[in-house]
Every structure is written in structure tokens, then in C-alpha cells.
Length: 180
Image (cartoon, rainbow, N blue to C red; front, side):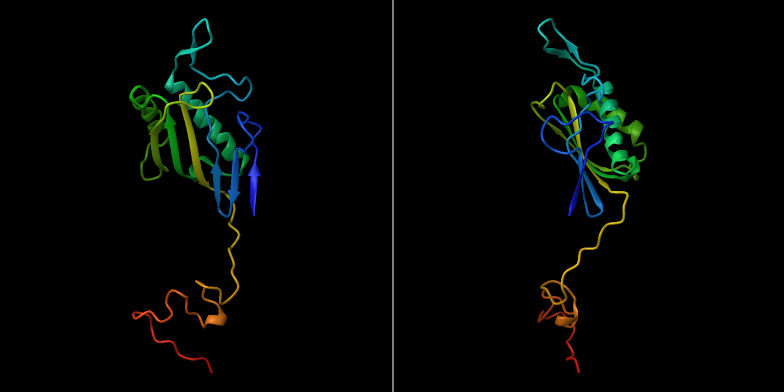
């Protein structure tokens, strides 16, 4: 069973999906952008007289994304330190990577405690933003144990005498003593 999470302190999703979903001991965040939760505006965007974005401030947008991710984590009962994997989407990799990477280093100064990270350059995002983050975190709660009936393939239950299906009959597996 999973739990959908909506965070009132984060910008509303642009589609019909939750901000996050808890599954077992993990928290999966939907793509989170830099939109201001109150005004829906994007920090650092500069528009021309036709309303098209002509410039953006990647530092301002990166800080806003981090604030929005933190809001979703907190609404989920998790903390910033619970992040384990982050995928970052940039619409201008050549122009924005250095600025975004500098802000990342402020928030995660020690690589030993930083989450894993993948950064991708993409053509566009659904709103006029330059960055979006998709995150996985530990959920801040104890996971519910996954249980299978004893003897089900791949388990070590009483019906299979503690031998997994993968090990039964394998030349390197220990000999199997019959039960008395």
C-alpha cells in the first residue's frame, strides 16, 4: 500500500499527481520546480513585452527548487538529510550547470553526506522554468515489512526447509538435510 502526499506549502502540481508518494520506507517526490507557492511566479525570470522569457536567474531558481523540495519533505515527515537520490533537469545545461552546481555545493557541502545525483539537459519543461528536481528520500518512518507466505519461491520459509528456490540443487549450495 502506498500513501499520496500533497504539501500545502509547495506549489501546486501542474497535472493530476501528488507531490510525493510513500512506498515502504521510501518517499518518491514528483518533479518539483521553482514556482512560488503563493503567487505561482518563477523567481528570476525576465519577460519581454509579449510575455516570453528572455532571461532567467539559475541561482534564484535553484534556491527556490530547494525550498519547495524541503516543503514537500517536511509535509511528508522527512528531512533534507533524508534525500538519497536526486535527478535534476536543466533546460540550458551549458549556461546553467556551473551556477546550479555552485548552489548545490552550498546545500550539500560534504559529498560523503550528499544524495546521489544525476543532472540531465533537456529541451523544455511544462512551465517557464529552467530547473526541476525529482527526488527519492527515506520516508522518516519505519518501513512496513514485506511478507510472503513460507515456501513461496525465493523465500526461506518452513515449507521449503529454509532453502531458497535459487539455491535448491545449486552445485555450490550446502547439502540439504531432510527434516525428521
